[in-house]
Image (cartoon, rainbow, N blue to C red; front, side, top):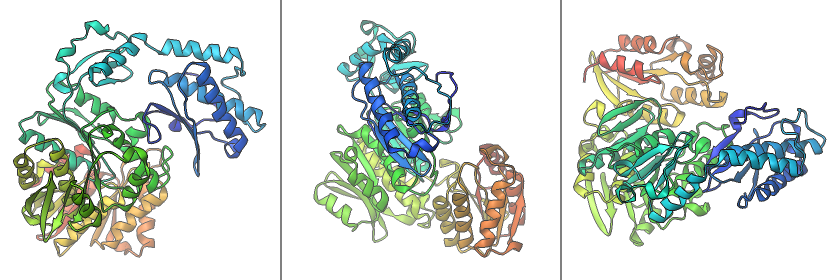
Length: 576
């Protein structure tokens, strides 16, 4: 940020971006120390932020204070090209408020007082941060109805095949922009706790079936026209921008993860459709998200992008999600589409009565209702991604993608055709319920990274009624102890014949080596799982291969693999 010492502040909690509180860019800061519980200090903090924003000529910041177990959040709106200065303002305001309250335990990093000197310093920083040409470009883009995307390095106008890009510090003059060559492309945002990547891939396949060149980003990378252009976790704004700035892209499908929303906001301000797949307990305690309700509000930030004419696709079976959608003003969009397990779900029935779109199961068939027309997709067991109907969670992913495809005005035959063939080959959906064979045993490779996803995966495995079930179990270190224990308890409930605990040395994320495996072991034993059925291995690939070596014909080996390179090497040794 400023390069100055951050006395009394946790940098991991200092955020900039459009978040769940505001549609406009915002700054979030969490103080540490006793003053966080002093209501007068907190009120003074917000008051100083408001006063300084007014002195700098900024719009009303609307400061919002939320007290949480892990700290106290102050969130306020700021101009999009003044976020660094706004963060400094927030630090200054808190330091002054805490010091005057007599409870400050740190040296002031911003000892500027409250008078003209402080205003002059922040005005100078703001002037250095802002680029006047960008302000004019933003206004011109709005007049032309063209999306503008910016980051720390670049600014671009238009999207996909209708985009152009320039260095941020050298933007074009308004009259030098080829406005007639710029346009948007159909864009979908996909978020949720589980199922995001699968839903993204299905929807991208529908775009291809429609004759468009799809670009999509996800936890595996950035892909354009079926080719990988970037490898790694690109489920945040960087991935979205990479897709939207690629000149070959004619339709964009953007996985939009929680962390990206909270740290840097949405990469787009407008989208044709946004999907929220579900809400599951995961990543609590990070960035002010303490419970499922907070997480639902975070995920529903995508609703802001479809407020003006787009479609919001929601999982009606998820009570936490639906409750959040009901209380958040920005989620009250004009067009909502719902999916659920049961066609007779009351929310779906009511929505169809109003002419809305739904997708759900009726008498074993997946039924899509759109524009007062009912389309029978077919029997669940005929849809490869459901693994003969055993993968119920993939029914939800298919339903969400189908509604989004229709909202994007894809032809029904393009939508239905993909539903009938996607998943028939293991690499249609790499890393997500990949099905392989090894010496007569069935091998399921998946990313299942939280208790909800693992439960879904093990339900599929048990539905296949194998004589023996083997499970690879591990977790990254950035979950809290309870979340790690919950993963182990979930595994124990399905009583595998063997659980192989793995270490993930490259995903310790602040933990000591051996710490996560020890937590998993303790939770398994506490849940009553037999010690003699637990093995341990310090290397993920070695752990997976030991299970494969033990498998016999008819067995099911469940391999939640965290590392892409390991997954690829394991895959290369298996048979379809």
